[in-house]
Image 1 (cartoon, one colour):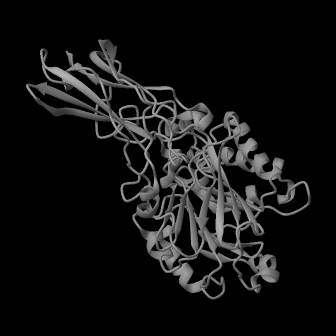
Image 2 (image 1 turned 30 degrees about the horizontal axis):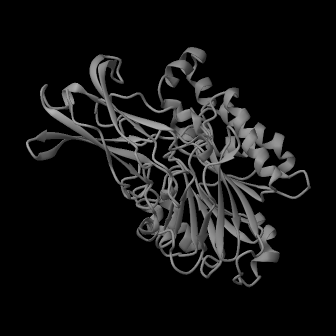
Length: 466
């Protein structure tokens, strides 16, 4: 289902014919966007932080707000009603207090159209509404078009286009990403997609093999990547993964520009870290980091030659890092290999040391476990990078040889928090059963790592006999 609305042409007619010209640094901001994703409104408890983000965008005089999916946590109409109510409370009649219009640039995510089947929701709905017809009326997916048009007071289409201050915006709702390529081809001339001027695109899953790389959780298997690769001026915004905006890999540049939007609900603590999310039945010894402390979004200023992206969290209202200056033309400065090569790894302060303790504790499942805990001070940020995680390796000592016997990665306790809340220490926990038998001398090495994988110099513990 496609829609290139009459409003698109009315709103952009005056600006669409203007010639796109480059500007020197410090030029005019042509467009300002608020960007959110994965707000996951379950009930009224989540509304205040959402309103706080909208008010921030209002006070900064944004021209539009992208929400890249997962608005209603369990796919229920009353949850989406809370989203719409908050929007119109902050932006009555889709206008800022100065009378200027602000555009909704929203798309459905998987939770919006499938969330009614997640967790205990089917049982809860059945208990609350014994009649199936009544239950169906409470599900967005029963008539996603009618629900959208009633709540947001605008037309709905699986793929849509709008114009904001002369810039084209395209959105694909969950499940319609596969129709993007044909939509672009059919509307390329009408939407003025070719040429130097950027156009913006939003969908819920990441375009495959872009932000965070090919292993990223929550990508679309490449359907949007194939469609957008014909347009180097395309800028895609996507969510779904909940990766932190402190991770520099949230911006990718290749055939086009792809930007991960993080989450206003909680930040995903990455797999394969001892204090990260469970994965592949690997038993973790450490509890999961408190992911709910990160509630993030961004403000994007569009210049002739670049985007300036302000990364923020909306609990304390702080920046989570320096602004990103993303070029819109010329060398792809945010290509992973280019940018990663410029990153300087964090380092431990001179004299930093590792200590080791042993005692009974509990693994993540709560079972009593004989554990070995490695303690170390936090590494210092470099000129380019904060610590993302630490590599912790155990070496067995035999005669004049140390050889590795175990290795883990552990996220910095503050990897997803503003720099003002930088951790001062770190730990990594091993089960004693993961290490060599009693009587073997073990030495632990810890190296700080930034998000592209550059590692600082290691620090070591004294040899200990476990």
